[in-house]
Amino acid sequence: MQQSLWVFGYGSLIWDPGFPVAERRIGRVSGWHRSFCMRSIHHRGTVERPGLVLALDAAEGASCQGVAFRVAPGAEDETVAALRERELVSSAYLERTLTVLTDGGALEALVYVIDPEHVQYCGGLALEEQARIIAAATGGRGPNRDYLWSTAAHLAELGIGDPDLEWLAEEVRRLT
Image (cartoon, rainbow, N blue to C red):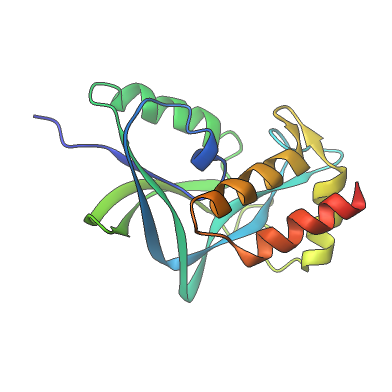
């Protein structure tokens, strides 16, 4: 019997997993924080006008809440292939397996984290600068602001709001 495949979502995977889901659990990974630290030149921006997308950025003492998805049995291979096509489009993300702590216990999940050595990495941008970039950018999957607003709304809906994302969502509304 094949072991279950779990995927940890902390951004758009929360509201658009793109694969068949058998189970969802709120979970937390330690040593990482959710951050708009990746310039998006495909999905939410262009080479000429990059947007910003979320990534897990390593940080001692940090943690990030998100959703652990158990992939529907039999869909594991196609899910990994689809995730790699979606998430590894520019190689700024690294594919990792991390321990996710959930109310149902600890589990190992596939997760995509930022490569801090990649040219698209931009950790440490001030929130005000992030808001200006997000308000102006559009890519192949639509306006950057829609990505922000959807993620912030879904996190709040799940009871795992993110104060930085909430501030950014309001500031981008003001700017647009």
